[in-house]
Length: 292
Image (cartoon, rainbow, N blue to C red; front, top):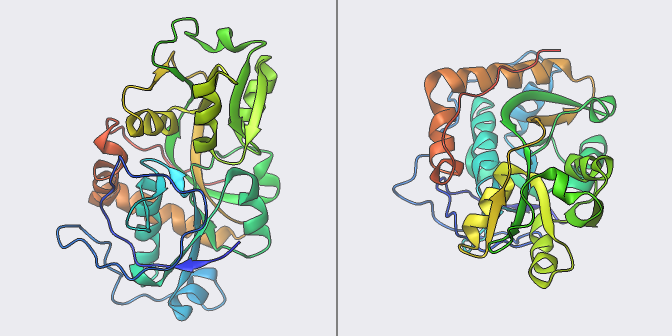
């Protein structure tokens, strides 16, 4: 996977075109009207901690999605935009790292744990559901958002109203994702690909009857293709989004939790939401981090 160092802009274009491949570096100027997460001027961390190493290096590598509208999407500007991206900026700023020193790596569902384990990224913020199986190989800060699995169908489909209607039906999801596992347990016939944007053409052609993943991801896909798709039914799972990092790096995990809680209190979290996913979805109070 090619790594790309690119400066970021803070506002999200909800209707941007999804790109599945890793983006090349670009020197785009920041939107003069955008709010940026300014790095902390003075930071000090205990020697030997991950925070100290990153602060001394002056850079951080963050894995995120490149094809998820509202959360992590590479748009026409060639830079990733979305709520997960903004959370990454907040964390970097508390390390004293400026936005142009964040290295963004495209991280799809199937490679999130390997990228963390192999040290290809420092953290992953990529609509990443916390579960016990994943916690055997990586650690999680957060959760910072509570999503839920739902269903996307063609706009004129009246046959599918809930997860019960998916039993025995071909449904598209993503390899290595929690939603794919849930579909199999439900009795649907999962049709798997590497990114959710790749599920849309099979849905258009009738190769699958639905796409199923977290409601916030589906809402972004529907908004990006206005009038073509709709989200149906109520969410049928709880999907706590966390920030993945190296297993047993307790100090770093606890520090990120501190940063998240501080952003809840000072308004940076809500500002990040309102400028990205909040253009489509209502704001809800964030869950308390699980300090396991």
